Amino acid sequence: QVQLVESGGGLVQPGGSRRLSCAASGSIFSINAMGWYRQAPAKERELVARITDTSSTNYADSVKGRFTISRDNAKNTVYLQMNSLKPEDTAVYYCNARLITGTTLRNVEIWGQGTLVTVSS
Image (cartoon, rainbow, N blue to C red; front, side, top):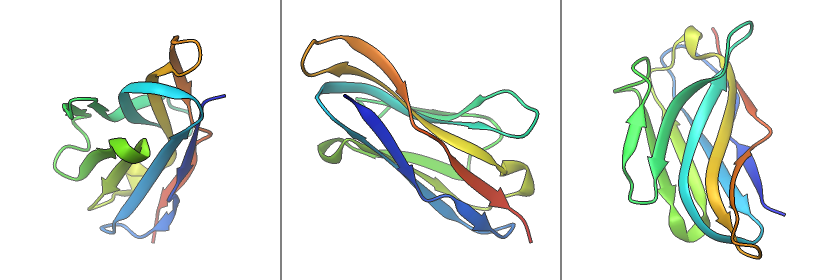
């Protein structure tokens, strides 16, 4: 079974930095794209950043210039470097992956369990 495991959440002061990591494990043939979404209280889940297998990236306007997404294909891991954090960045951050499984060669989309990032003084 394929799964995503996130880490790196926590409390950070405004203006601070944090790096999130998400590792995919299990039987994986290839990963097409990985991304980060977030959901703040009483709001819908939104895309934060996404990176394809060719390292093409896109970002939400609200994080451009502050967040950087990257991936290590050898480790099936995606990172989100968050700088100049603001209170409005407070949310549960979810990792997402679109991949082809190794055993059945099926296209699937999977989600991590989420990691909470709180930006507060």
